[in-house]
Length: 138
Image (cartoon, rainbow, N blue to C red; front, side, top):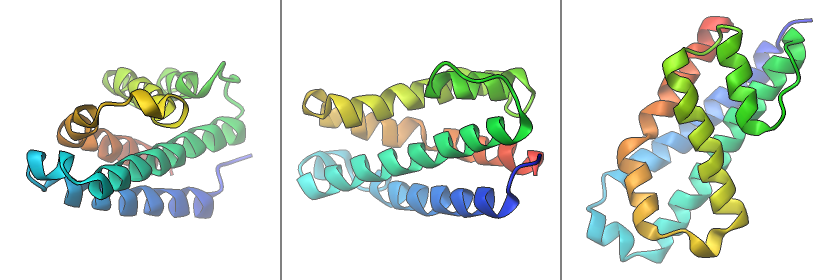
């Protein structure tokens, strides 16, 4: 069995769209961003769906290639690193991405808007590196 290229291409396209939205929000001055609940909410949503797409890509790849079954979503990225799909130096960032998504979804009331602003400034490149690694697999 091999990965469904059309499915992966669709998911990568969605990641690209969501990250483009996040980049627009990252360009907003920090005080303005944090002071606008609509911008913050938009960033939270786009982070959740972009990360979900990345998880879906990982799980589809793992199942299609018959890699070991991951213990959880974060471990799915570890499997991709173990199998040489993703570079080793990206593993911690991808695992952190899952933890960030979990906070946004499961303990949303505790997420400080400054954390969202920090993630916008520091971690959008992680999505690009992940997409590049997946494209190499295809």
